Length: 78
Image: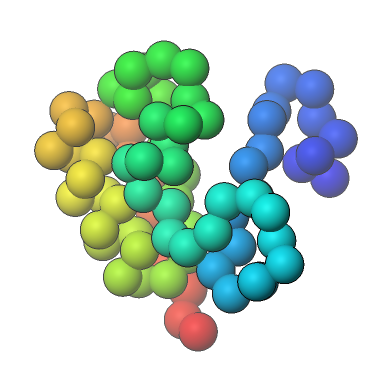
């Protein structure tokens, strides 16, 4: 459904799909800066994924100058 929205550009990031040609692994600052057009501080981040990824990504976003008000997360267990 998200892929059908005209005002949203989705980037699929898969962890363990050897034949996938897109982004692989955890979402990190490198992935974000490759796909986002503006400075990171201009975005709202809604993060969902493995707890270790969320913790690392939130820390990296804060170090990059993104305010706490622009970062939310939802943890899920594997």
